[in-house]
Length: 300
Ligand SMILES: [Mg+2]
Image (tube, rainbow, N blue to C red; front, top):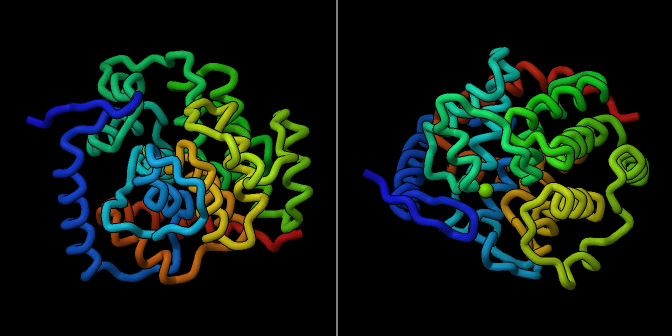
């Protein structure tokens, strides 16, 4: 029987034991896994940022893959959304399926109850849980209208507050735009005009007095700025963590956008990321890429 404990508003269940298990499974599995060039950048961000959520580091200089890093709720729900798209499954039941498989991934208290509810209802949340899980939507659709509609649908099952819907749509739209436009100023103005976020800030300006904030409205724009300010995939992840906020979620959002913009990361980063993931997630991720990466078109 696992015992729940609470850190801030997040619930962890026997966290230490769980991380050990994850490490054993993933490192053991990695020996027999066939190495693939595809991976979700959002998941790298989640893993890298996982140990800094409470640490509030204000630096871009840190060990990228610390031994205590682990995937968290951001990864589990990103995989759940990818699975829903890939296999045409309803978002709510599929999020419950994956969430219950990995109940100790650090969910917010309300979402944890939602995951285990027999009749899950949206609870008017504006939490950034709506935005952390949508990068697959930004990759899977061919028009911005579809991306926004689908991101809204994915959010509405739990995070149906207008700011929750908006945060999901903005994060997915940023991934979509980053696939097609290699002009960051264009991406900045498109997101700003469409969603009203203030993106005319630098990561350095935000970092000065930014603190943990789990709302979409005060963490999604900052994550997008981390990407806009970056020089590479890795730099986007480092900048997102360095803001000193909800580091795993903000690096997850920035990582998804950065992947769409830069292409994925250096092979070494991808290889290390895969070592943190169980085989069933890797299989699904690879299937997702096989189906959707082909839709990628040249930048204009
Ligand atoms: Mg998390």
